[in-house]
Image (cartoon, rainbow, N blue to C red; front, side, top):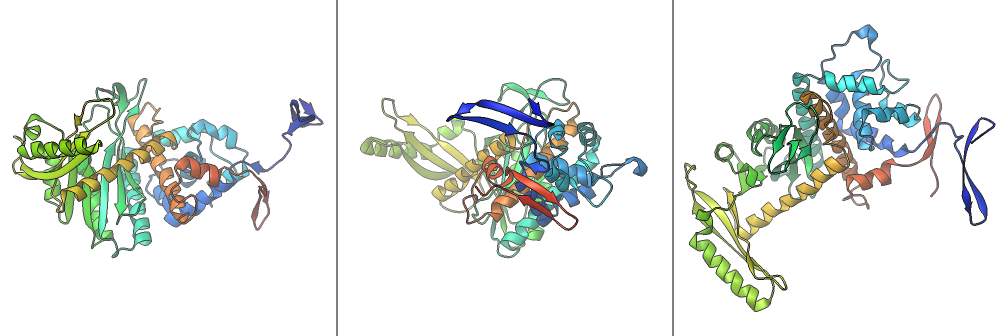
Length: 441
């Protein structure tokens, strides 16, 4: 109901009192903490660099919203949980979002509309998208160089992992993928880890057709990534870590030709590997321990192996494991890794299993930042959305790194958003300053 021009919402009596919600406060926001995104953006110089990589072919006299403002509105919105362009209808009068999108140009007064944002996404060319991917990669590497030290870093791990992006309707290049049992895209993401630091930095995200095999596009991505890492970290050794879908001779041959580059990859099981005497001995020892202790047991070893399609023998790490569960028969669980790394098999296997954390990062990208909201008809527009979501993730990673030593240092994206961004406040704007009055609680 309304009273005297005010909107009043009544609730049933609680504890003997009538509850009223009056929607009568001007200049109020529920995203006061989103201004932190602007600080992270300034530190990384991200949106400004991205905007500089885009060729704006619009007529100058008819342009109301600059490219930089459109990028900020879209990337900051994704970081704050506004995944769709039409979310702007709810944010148009929010003073914080007007401030976040503001640039020094003509678009300082209002947010861009949904049609404007959609035209922007669909107007990006393949040249623009390649340039945006390069900028994102360079900004992430430069930030890591400042944080970890160019000459202090001794080891960089590169994780490559695909993820299923289920798609529907008439979208370019979607295809049926039997492994995921759906029509989909198959984005390929790359993450960097430095000297055992827990953060996995997203450095690239490439949209691919659902008909792609996991390893397709891996070598071109690495060819663009590795030179920049070597320039930024001249003393670091690079290790590429991939799962069984990347067990491809072309990738291994290429990596073995690169200087100061190593790899460890899961090797799919086959009859030849499972028939090796080394595996039989490891499983026998593990089975004896499992029966003696009543718990699952594992043994590690190695062998030299070459498949028929390989042109050389390679080192293969073998894990012979026997799992023993109550009420079930013992089960053999052998695993194989192919690598050119040195070291004890147990240590190399532990290094490989650390890549399991990448699954959590992919869940964050899809569940919290809508990496899989590829609902445009054009493939290039969907690649643009993937890059925008990746950029939003990079900003939130910067906030997480800035929170080292606090309760948020290992928080996932949803938790960061709730604790740091979703803060209600009254906004007071004057000529010299912007003041946000938040609740003491």
